[in-house]
Amino acid sequence: MTPIERAWRGTKNDWRLHALSVFSVAVAFVCLASALLVVVNVSRVRDRWSSTGRASVYLKKGAEREQIATIQRALPASDGARAVKFVSSEEARHDLTGQSDDAIIDQLPTEAFPASLEVSVESEFAAGRLDKLAGQLGALPAVDHVETYAAWGERLAALLSGGVTASGLLALVVLCAVVSVVSSTIRLTLQRRRIEIEVLKLVGATDDYVRRPYVVEGALQGALGAMFALLLLGSLFAIVISRFDASFATLLGMTPSFLPWSLALGLVVAGGALGALAALLSVRRLLSA
View 1: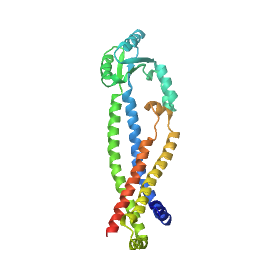
View 2 (view 1 turned 120 degrees about the horizontal axis):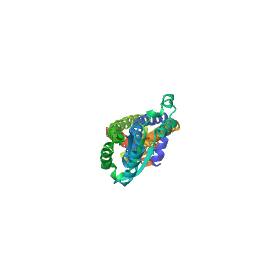
View 3 (view 1 turned 90 degrees about the horizontal axis):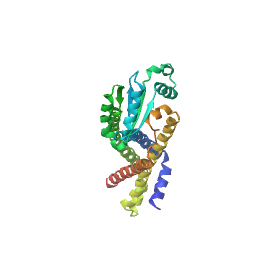
View 4 (view 1 turned 180 degrees about the vertical axis):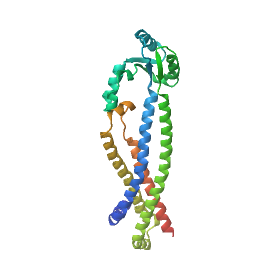
């Protein structure tokens, strides 16, 4: 009988114990996968904002049309600026009210929305060019102020750094949780099958022969726990996305996405490896006792 067949027979005999172990592992992996999901989407937002340089040039009230036209003509000729779009106060109000269901925003007068020039900058110039361009534009008499959104990029970078740190800590917690849960399950299983193990040892079975099915069981528990966690998190993510506000997606410049398949597969493989390692250590300790 192969180790997989022996592991399957043992799992069927103690399926309640193994199901509880899989559930416990899944809870740990849900925490880790959730943190990774946040990190992945924050990273996408940061990459999108950093790769597309842009600036909003807000114009003063009463700015003359000729002054605005002069800026519009001059910007495309400057190094790195690739497109300039004039947005009037009426257009700005229409765009915002069309994306929001807030009654307070709908009641705001047109004067509350300043006219602006939306400037797109080529990505290779975005890092240093935007600050220089903002300084030049801010000195013009028709310009009130210039928003480059650099502060938002810095905040996202700080948030991403914190998310990576939190994910690393959660990974350690998950490692300890999986090793503890699988080890406890394998130890209980060994106690229940002690007579079977003693018989195998009496007929000349090696420690490796006795150990293999338990390692397979531990790997299955870890991998199934990670898969169940991904399925649960995916279901919750689908519910959230179905209610995701389109205006918020427009603000972010993207719609949140689930974990990439490579990362999801990595979690399943990691779960299986941790389960196998925990089972191996438990069986080795008990066989050597």
